[in-house]
Each structure stands twice: as structure tokens, then as C-alpha cells.
Image (cartoon, rainbow, N blue to C red; front, side):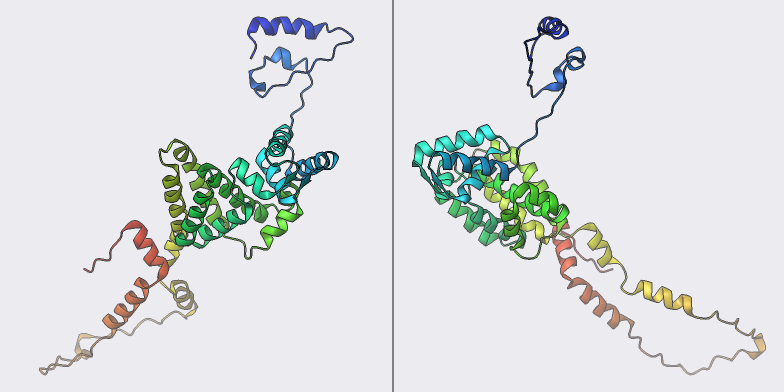
Length: 319
């Protein structure tokens, strides 16, 4: 960024510009510009280019250069560029120098160390289902292909984010991802729970810094994936409170409210009270302990209660 003296010299040029000069000032740190400069310029905020537009532009370049490149490779190139057209063109040039004018999806995966879309969807499905065995098996396949652990985590986060966006804003998801990617995500089956997706994304974002600084990134990624798989067994606080509530309490309250008011009991004088008999009267055995034990057994066998006790390492103590 320029110094204050340089900005003052630039300000004089902006105040009295020559007629034949068109001044364009591009920066990514607009907050560091003085107000005197901003007040004399028209501001245009550049947005990132969507993946479908980048794919269309790369297809035009490939046709003009008589190159053969698959649609899957173009989609992955556009996703790799993250909205930057210049980065996408540079990546295409790098692929041409590596594979010639016949580029496939495998070339993109090999050059940039990316996880394929099919493999990423399989890993995400295993994580969402809580299948740690399948998830670790997919990680071992990535390791055999020398895939970058950070790239794997980023691709997984992007896929989960796309699933969440498709549920919250379907129109924006189609404009950003394209119809083909949207139909692919819809064909995966029932959409995952939004709260579960948000929890997974939060865990991925929190672990990204630790993954970058780890001395054994592959081991750190395995631990991260195992944590993500275990998150399916976690129970929300709202679910625990519902399970801990007394069953049928609302129904009993409503039935009690609908009953008519009881009339006062008649007053009995002391002379009318029956005298206690000398013989002992046997008492009937109450069935309350048996019913309580059955209710306790049903409560402890509830899957949500088991998961909550496992998470908090809780125990039931009889008094």
C-alpha cells in the first residue's frame, strides 16, 4: 500500500487529471485507502465468477485450441479455481503441458492431488451415516493415490456445504453449482439433517488449522474423520430434555382439568368415627414398585438416553 506522501501526490493527479488519462486503481485492501481518494473515484466491487461460467469459458478455449477435455475435468478445474478465471486458465495450461491436448478427470486429480467427486461423495455418505469403517477405508484409498489430506478435508467441507445450501436456498444452489451438480446431489437420496450438517461443518472448520500444523497430517485426518462419524450418535439437548420429561404428563394434566370439581366431604363427628379393632387388618401389596421398575427399565433402554449417558459418562444411582 502507498504511503501518505504518495497518496497526496496521487490526489493532485486525481483532482486535475489530463483529458486523455483513464485511471484504474485495483486493490484487495480498499479499507486502507484514504477517504480523499475514495471520494474522487467510482467504486466497483468485483465478485467471484460462478463455476458454470468458468466451465463455459474454458470450453471455448479448448474448442479454439482443438483440445479434448471431459466435462468432469472442466467442472473440477472450475471448482479448483474458486471463482478466479485467471487461475482456471493457468491450471488448464498446466494440464496441457502435462497431458497434451487430451485431458481427462484422472489427469486433473493426479496433477493437483484432488479427491474425485465420486470418492468425496462416498466419504461424505459414510460420515453422515456414522460408518467409521467405510470412512477409514475410503481414506486408505486416498492415501494409496497420494491425495493431499488438506485437499480431502476441503473437498469434504465443500460437498457438505453444497448439501446444506441445496436445502436452504435451492435457487441459489442451482445458480452456483449448475443443473448437473444439483441433480447429482438430489439423486443421493433423502437430504441429511441440517443441524447435523452444520455440526459437521463447524468441526471441519475448527480442525483445519490443527490439520495444517500437524506433523502427521494423515493421522490427524483419520482422527478428524472418526470424530465426524461419532457426531451422529450425539444427542441434542432438546432431545434429552424431551426424553427426560415424564411420559404423558400433558395428557394427565388435561384430563385432570376436564374433571368436574369435587364436592366437599361431609363432616364427621368424633362419636361417629369407627373404633379400631383389636385384630390386625392385612394390607394389600401395592404394585407400585413393580410398575416403577418396569418404567425405569424402559427409560434406560431408550437409545437416546443411552447415547446421552455415554457422551456425559453418566450413571444411574439408586437411593
